[in-house]
Image 1 (cartoon, helix red, strand yellow):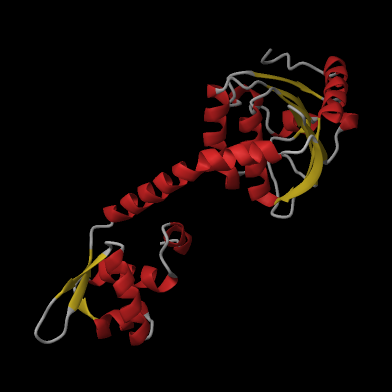
Image 2: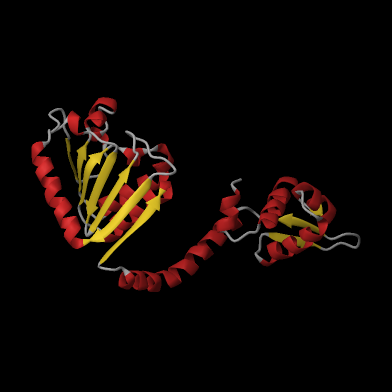
Length: 255
């Protein structure tokens, strides 16, 4: 099982190893547990005590050697719900502080797939129409599948419209892509072939996001996103976008 899941639930590496060992082997003494989990016996005692406190393990008292066993893995779901409940208590105040903190003009950089997820969160938070110049279907990189599905579900709920100026190569390499685009509010055109680049500009609200080194349908771990928060700059980019839109080619097959 992915160790990151246990970390999210608040388990240490030793606790995770012992819990998995008990799930697999059942009722066991401390010596066997240490062997199954491949940790030192002394560390096993401490980790088991913490697992008992968290309700993931229970002790079986014996005249010889006390033994231990794991509770049903459904308990992990309860732990996650507790974490979510704790987060929901502090989230409103954090969001209030964040909204107050956002400067009228600022610039910063995100990187890689986590950077793209941050941008999606900003799009949903702002809740405004999205305009994209040089779109390459890079959001449909398979590494973003799960997060992307949730993003578009929320974007559709918020009725966010997407206006995309695709590079010419998208029409050639992904001929049915636009027809199956998941946004309910969606319009697109294609840039002329001679204006294809390896860069993208994304505009929404008071934000302009530019990034480079993108392939059709593909991002990279080191992709850099240059974020500029500026109302004046965003309005300028939008004007340029709509000029390019008027000069670009509608898709006669689907429109």
